[in-house]
Image (cartoon, rainbow, N blue to C red; front, side, top):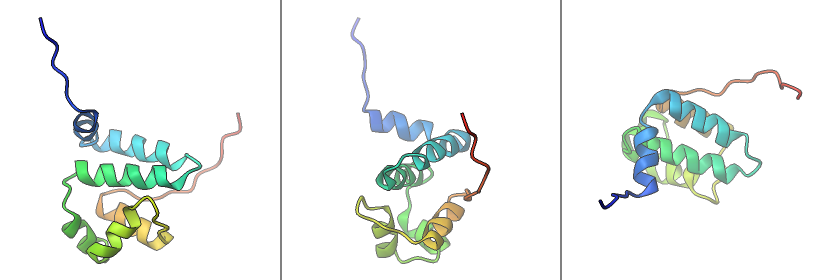
Length: 101
């Protein structure tokens, strides 16, 4: 019996179609010290949720070029841009108390 494999990216995008999983994924990535991790996660969620850069850019009131810059590994987006993109994807940022462990 041969085992069938598929690309991890296909598996990830399939899982991120579920809004609750996408939310958990984004929150976990947001906690990483390297902001590139969050930007990559946001890009993955965008792709999984439909992948239409043009419509997300329009909904976020950004140009396509600006959205590509926001999501690039060298991106340094403004908070307003991040909030707009997250809102276009059906999410929002929230501030909550830090839990000391």
